[in-house]
Amino acid sequence: MDLSEHSKRLRILIGEDDHLGSKPLYEAIVMKARDLGLAGATVTRGLMGFGASSRLKTAKILRLSTDQPVVIKITTTKERISRILPFIEENMTGGLATIEDVEVILYHGRHPDR
Image (spheres, helix red, strand yellow):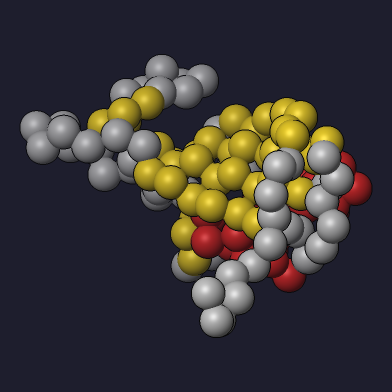
């Protein structure tokens, strides 16, 4: 895929306990992004956070929450970002999604001989 110098990043913040059926929502989103031909996606777990409900989510042992913050970053072209937005809007019951401009300086797969 040829990413233009000026692409977009979709950033989705949800909880680790958010699901779509029996599958974690973050996994469903990444698989949908792949199926739709988006350039790439990464999921990271946060150590601590809160959102619109102001409910604190943390990895500290003394806390009872196992619903860690999860960030999904998808970088691709503006046109391809628009392909996944209906899926996001339909399946996110809480959280935050943002789109921002990014400048792509390098994008290519690994070569087996390197």
